[in-house]
Amino acid sequence: MNTEERERALLELVADERDKTCRQMHTAAETRARALMDDAYRRERAALHERVLAERARAEGILRAAAAERATTERRRGEHADEALITAAWPRLRAQLTERWAQAEQRRRWVDTTLAQALERLPKRGWSIRHAGGWPRAEREIALGWLAQSGIDPPALRADGDLAAGLVVAASGAVLDMSLEGLLRDRARIEARLLALAKGRATPRAAAAAGAAGTAARADTPEVPI
Figure 1: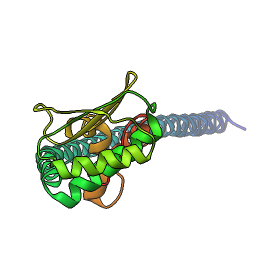
Figure 2: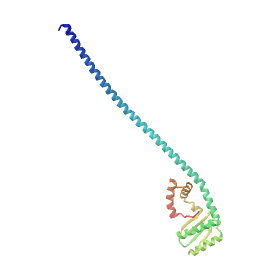
Figure 3: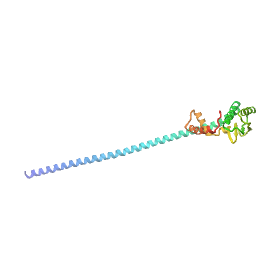
Figure 4: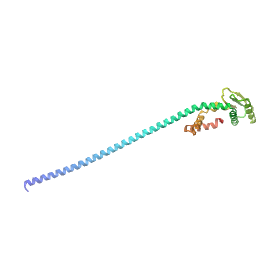
């Protein structure tokens, strides 16, 4: 092998090594580039997932806030409607009770119910009765006769100009107030019943008030069919 051939062989060897080294570098660069791209994709996917979760949470928060606001608005609207109903109904209730006292049949029922409850609840001695105007003498005598048959000594009767309707019976410090004012004193219970009657069913507010007040009413509050 002459000098020229040796030089050509050496050049070919150098070229082969160069090509081999270039291929290795190229392969390494591609591997590194793919690793960098995969890492970038993973980071971007993770960041996108976090953004999606954050946006979903924000949207759910907006929906919850809107639902709460709507519920509050509806509750306030219902409360305002209840208040308007009670405001309109209360004076009419007073007027109707006053009218019932002015009607003979209804007044007799009122008196009979009052005296029957008084016989159940009050001591049998020392009765006094305050009554509203418009209770005729004949009806008073019938009531006194019934009390006498029930073993009650003749009570002290007195017309009370402060009473718009009804009776107040007292005995030995105990009082049964069946006047208009006494019947309307437990306003919470009455309003709850008015709301339940007006709506055909007990609302949560009405049911709660009626339940709490009704228990007390059975023990302490007189009832009259009105």
